[in-house]
Image 1 (cartoon, helix red, strand yellow):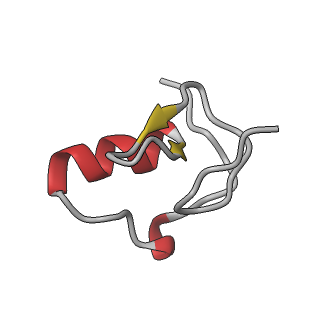
Image 2 (tube, rainbow, N blue to C red):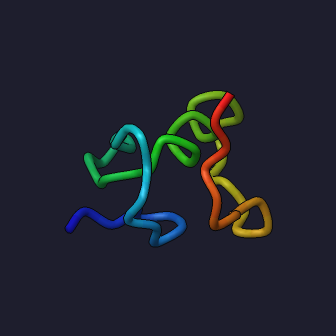
Length: 51
């Protein structure tokens, strides 16, 4: 299965890629695009919130 290069999750609604083409989960990919830094692991949760 695909694993996020940053947080090692395998569960995400959408896979994204970093500049080198490594897979990132949706959360890490969006965070990196917005902030230009990798997403800190302290933000990782085990639940995906629906809205």
